[in-house]
Amino acid sequence: MTKRIILISLIFMFALGIGCRSAVVKNINNQPMTLNGTPSMQQVEKAIISAGAGLGWLIKSESPGNLTGTLALRTHVATVDIKHTKTDYSINYKDSKNLEYDGTNIHSNYNAWVDNLSKAINAQLAAL
Image (cartoon, rainbow, N blue to C red):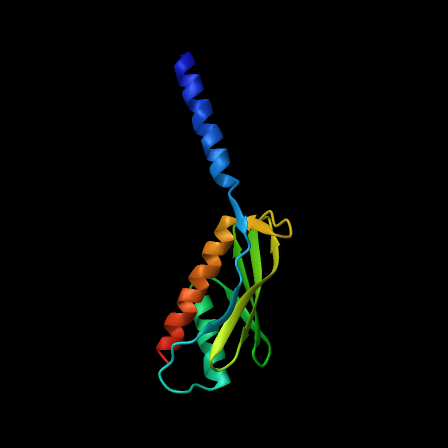
């Protein structure tokens, strides 16, 4: 019985450790676009919005070349600024809730979400 309690305690402590992972906030700056042709700013914006929507991001246009993306999963919320031209884009941290952001570090899932968004944007842009 004592071994069972120790095993359960170790599993519980390990699970808590996994949930507390943090990493330096990842920003993507001036990511070059792989394009077929020369799309308009509106086409690039639509591609970014579509890429985000496929992953659950709500992306809104703030002004030409400036978008805001929000991803809400369970109690976690991440908000990013997405700036773009006809040839490159940037994704930068803007705000978050329940991701333990301390000014430098954030829950490591945030970086995975940003990476996935960037990959989806690249795929949408390549299809233009």
